[in-house]
Length: 67
Image (cartoon, rainbow, N blue to C red):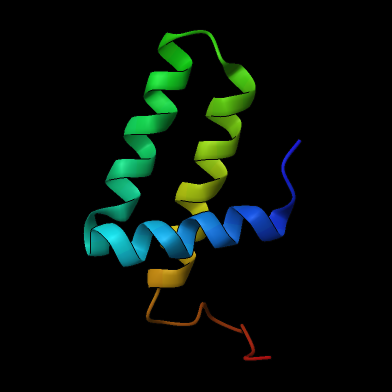
């Protein structure tokens, strides 16, 4: 199991390396894990994709507050 903090760190690293293509790169890794039967790896990479998309998000959802 990977810590949430590590998922966010990985997301930031991928954004620095790949810019706007970071989510695509992470999704490709998730697909590779699935193809090789690594379900846990796929779950982790999907979490990284979600973190990347959240970091790239520009608008708040309706009713969402800024911390």
